[in-house]
Image 1 (cartoon, rainbow, N blue to C red):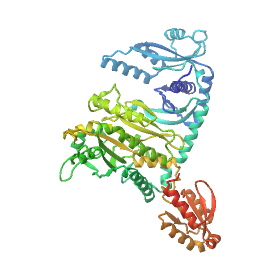
Image 2: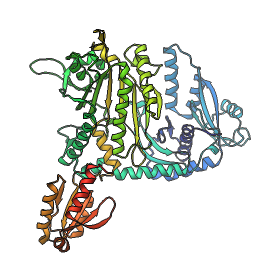
Image 3: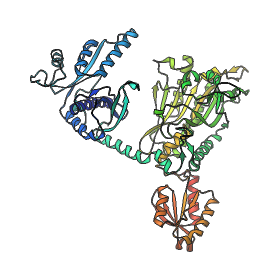
Image 4: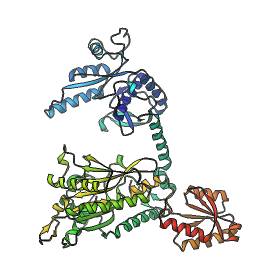
Length: 625
């Protein structure tokens, strides 16, 4: 039978728990779900110290269990029977789960099953009925003295809702690897017991696991949190605040180049640039509906002579609504397109923050289009063209897909607006996705609270997936702000608002790009494009003369005139990922040439100054990878 990877990961979580209890008797087990790339299980080892040094032993035990072709068999008991079994096992965490489930059912007057399921692992041929009989007759956690055919098959038992693979024979013993040890509070409450969480990677087979491990090793080498410090792109300061990055001059070069490229893609499509302040009164976000959904993630600003309550803006759309509202537009003016690369602020939870990819100050390349329903498809089409051109430039277009993020029909309270409006918005985006031939998948529950969206998912150089560009269709905020324009009958007509961001946020995009390019940027983005390295001090004047010529063409260039050896100078330039390293000595001075070393390709050749300058200018203008 062909089992899903999630079922296999769940089975491996049970096998790890069995191996842990085999090697560390008395260990208590908590919960162990599958994850995106494997699984984890939480344990209470008591006074015993568990570390990654124990991984090899546990992995060996897990492989032995798999080789035994143990069956996974399920049986159900009442709440009281479950508690009796768990008391015998000294599994206090599982008992609490039984109590919480029974309490929830009582409180909600909803009897789901009134039963608790257990999964047992047995040797091949074990019968669940025999094991159940055994559980009734004997304190079952003590396996000693189990001579008879009836119960010697029982190997492991765990309270679990399932489902599971039928047998460990469905699992590849070489498809998993224990990853790391972490700490977790029981039920996520800091007042509860601190548990040991063991993470593991698990995939369909060894080949898929090895591919993932290779990706992780590459990711470690590319980690932007290391490279940004090494390359002096950003700075963080405890005095400023955590996850509020400060851009160094080199980081600003990259950021400004991306921002200018984004504007180049928009200005010829008739966007207008606007600017809005960094804070606003609470009433703005009450009107937009954000206060009811995002208030706990917003930074409040109190005081001042006005004694009014302000918030740092968490998004730009309510501000842009005010700009539109202060104009008188007719149907002939539509669509109206605003573009603003603006910084917004969100009080993200500490556990969610990471380097540049999740920060508290977020600069969005934000845009809002005000259009008619009949114009939605054409406008989405134009935005998709921008998205494709932008990500092709960065080498990210291959293998992308699009999430058509719609409402979750089970939780209507999460959204604002009328059902018929949502249906129009969702249908409009799906029709646009079909018309553009996008590789899209409908994802219920992923919509914004005010409307559905198209989220673009891209793979970086080592295969990791990132959600970056987004296009969102909004009928609700124009209604809340009573926006209108005059139609052909000179009557007020409500516009649709299309929210769009191409890079997502500049900080996150830059963090991803640092890792995508492993710190060696395409020349048009590189903070230091060229470094001249004189072989000796007497060739420094020639190096500075070449530097002046390159700078006249706006090429970013430095000279290493230090007393270091040639090898050290070249090595220093390579460590800073300088694209072109130009070595100049007696021969270069005599012939007015430069010895060119391409850091990315490792090619080396000699070129005259004009030839090199022309090559570099062409590479910059074409935004070559």
